[in-house]
Length: 237
Ligand SMILES: Nc1ncnc2c1ncn2[C@@H]1O[C@H](COP(=O)(O)OP(=O)(O)OP(=O)(O)O)[C@@H](O)[C@H]1O
Image 1 (cartoon, rainbow, N blue to C red):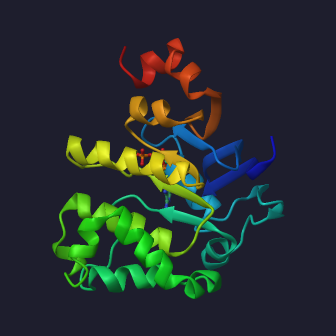
Image 2: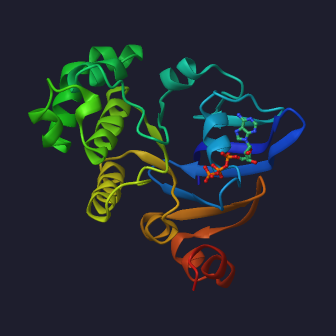
Image 3: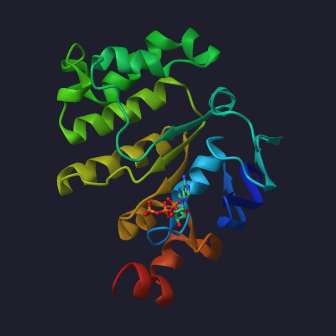
């Protein structure tokens, strides 16, 4: 397996507190990989470290064979890693269209802006209908679609989703998972952090279980769904 992203022995500290402890994982081109873990296990910290928001104390993060550990976020983004952050981070006073345009910051994305915008509007017709509307007046589900659309505008090769279904109604949650799967079918590689463990392992090719900042278990989505420890701790079965 040739890894698109390879995280190797990454340690992250907040002051004296260690949030990631020797974390290693790989994602191959074309995979959906899920990260599962309890509140505070370090899932967001992992995504934020890959994205250059947090700086690891040790370890390497190789994307397409280049070590990007410690790079600032804009360079990580330029390299082709997109991040749909927790909590639907849209600019509430800007229109849908302006929010989308702001996503096209990497150089190669600017050149393709028109085509990508059409792709986003095909994927999310509601955003097209509401392109002049202020983002802050969209429903929660529409804001999540906008956050995903804005990320796509940056032409990423890998998208990291941090809790994309958090706080959304069940039908919208299904829609979010459908979109994640569709993006993957269209060729995007995906790292998915979700509190909806059942749904995320169902669509994931592989998954990792993170506990107290350490990877404790890994396997195919199917094997993890059938693992007694996962079933007890995360599925309440
Ligand atoms: N900016 C910060 N400063 C200090 N400690 C932090 C900071 N961000 C996170 N932590 C701590 O690091 C640990 C991991 O937090 P993180 O948010 O990565 O976990 P998580 O698995 O994403 O949890 P959740 O599912 O609740 O979002 C927690 O103990 C948290 O309190």
